Length: 340
Image 1 (cartoon, rainbow, N blue to C red):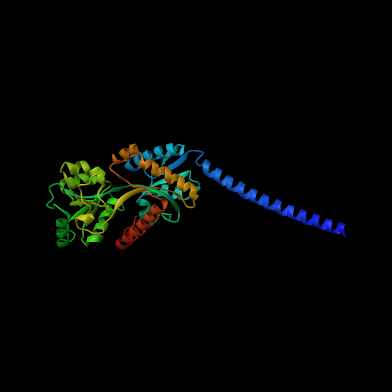
Image 2 (tube, rainbow, N blue to C red):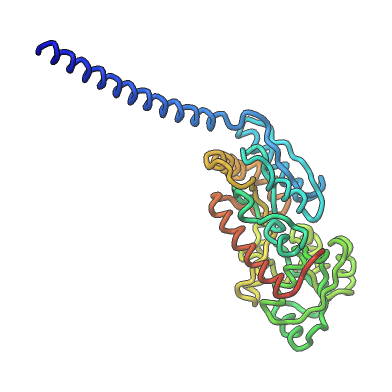
């Protein structure tokens, strides 16, 4: 009898030891998995990153991207190599990034065209929200409504009153169909109800001589490039297109302040990656970006480009991209603007 009890106790003890062993192994496995995940996160980045730019070297987009890439790379401890992939107004680069491995090593320096192009180009094959992971906004650069220096209009209210009384008589130049310069004018017409005659040029530099000569009545070019002409009196600024005044020209009112409440159009830039990037990697990139933008030396370099620095969370940037996508989709469809 005692022998049977002894054997029963022995079996129960063996069973308990096995349960404890299994529990211990399970806990060890979980700890090891967590350790590996932490180590993998801590190792990022362990090789150079690629920052894709959808335009040619030397322009404002490329210049700003390289300033940001150098500073972020210093904070991440890795080189960020800038790759220029121009074509189709940035669509080629955008689509290539949407198909990249979402490991954080391929990121994209994108702009307002990211939200505009899918509605504008029938050939665009990406969703600006679903196919990307927002990392953070970098900056905004306002356009500015300008008229020739000898224009009879001294403020925006005078211009709007004349345009309403004379539909189609005033013409507005742009740097081409679908450009931010063109869309600024379309948004202005929608917000004010005025009718302007659109004259597209092949680039801002081609249109400006006609604007200075009074061949065209007005234009919405990029503010930084127009500042010397505004300061010299060759052009008159009616208002900047963003909802807030520009840091580089705080004396110029916004179009909203000057008589068109709610008007808001800015050429923004930011960083995104392919969809489904690891959240920890996104946050690490966002922190490096915000630290770079807070650096006084980087601020000075970017302000010299005539842009306003914007920083923030991936979530805030994602919400902005969604809002921009919705806004431009409505405007483009309402006006039947398409580019083959």
